Amino acid sequence: MADELAALHRNGTWTLVPPVPNTNVVDCKWVYRLKTDQDGNLSRYKARLVAKGFHQQHGVDYNETFSPVIKPATIRTVLSLAVTNKWSLRQLDIQTAFLHGDLKETVYMRQPPGFVDPTRPDYVCLLNKSLYGLKQAPRAWFTKLSTALRQLGFYGSKTDPSLFILNSSGTLVYLLVYVDDIIITGNNQGAITSIVERLNSLFALTNMGQLHYFLGIEVIHHRADLVLSQRTYVLDILQRAGLADCKPVSSPMATSQVLLPDDSPLLDDPSRYRQTVGALQYATLSRPDIAFAVNKVCQFMHAPTENHWAAVKRILRYLKGTVNYGLLFRHNTGYQLQAFSDANWTSTLTAFSDSDWAGCPIDRRSTGGYAIYLGSNLISWSAKKQQTVSRSSTESEYKAIADTVAELIWLKSLLRELGLDSKAPTLWCDNLGATYLSANPVFHARTKHVEVDYHFVREQVTQGELDIKFISTDDQIADIFTKPLSSQRLEFLRSKLQVVPRPQLAGEC
Image (cartoon, rainbow, N blue to C red; front, side, top):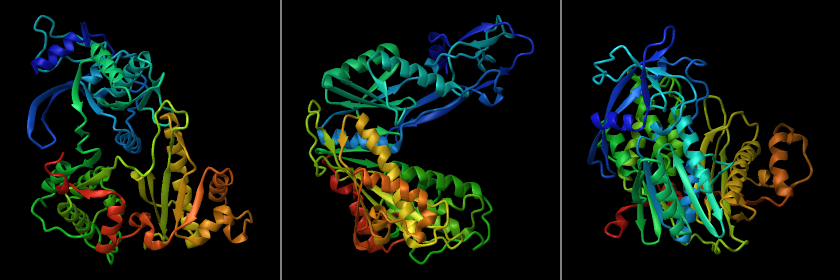
């Protein structure tokens, strides 16, 4: 606590002033936390002074609030490029990040508990810098960091505001920001070292060296490849759910299982269900094989039943048996990236799109899913119930294609900003009707109800920006995102998603 307070004073976080009548004064408290490493071992004790932001009043002591964080697909895209080019990945941590932000609003706060100035006990803190807990603290910190990075020659990405790019005279550096955690990589080690030194002179920065643990995700370097694993995080979920010693199962969801709103008595404590499912959502960052099952149990968060909880426990039992699995990024991705100085630096995007027509027995909506690869590395996927009811399997498949195309367009924009000229992506679909509809200039009367998606997809095909091809259902990788599968089928598609076991990497990382 004393160290935290000393850091606040060094930073000039506040000035003690006499209380001003008829003003809102925000309270504060101390928050304590045990910090652990990637193995779950205690690394240090941490005390943080936090303002009670819920005491703030909109328009009085705060206005705009937002907290830009890097998108998972952006992280995976940059990691794929770094692995392909054998670039080093470095991790930085900004100490007391929110304390660097400059406040534009006038905010008064009570003195910290246990550290009240004995000579001026009735005074209040006029905040000069942002503080953890304030509603505008994330915005103030991001503005401060963005300004500093622009002075170093970076520019912000338009497709992802938390991605900053330095592209100058053949030097390429990517910087990913997730609040106070930063990943930096590029093709010039000297430039990266210089940038780290400049940032260290501006902020209290911890250089954590090679990227190994980021946002609860362990990064395992195996020869020239890389594996993202959430083993420690999954084990923690199992421990909190009381299933640390459960018996594993071979699939996250039974093929015959049907979940309905009132299929069994309501849970006495729905908060446990919601906390566990919320944790499982984060686990899908490196485990696409559970995306469909997690999406299904998420649909009953408002009133979970005992059967729904049993479905969640099955997902946990599946994770127990596959706790050592992670998402693999290969160096040899199946395509060659040329030197960045070459203007013809290109990449290849491949997508698989699928839909389970009227699969939901409650509202008969379809579930759509897609998997998108950069070379052979999986960088984006989705399993999501469609917003409207489809009147045919062709319509549901075509809507799934439209969702996939929207993601492809975003990824192409991202790659263009990263310095890659992406070729026209290939999208594989296992529905002949939807495939023909994307290329057939005749707009049949039976497809009037999909007119918007029709024009959106067909425009991309006509302009040569997209190539849609038919694929057999047996080879459709996105099948894993639309329905529960048998263990044999799941295992086959899981390998196609590059979800691999960690034991084979033991002793070689």
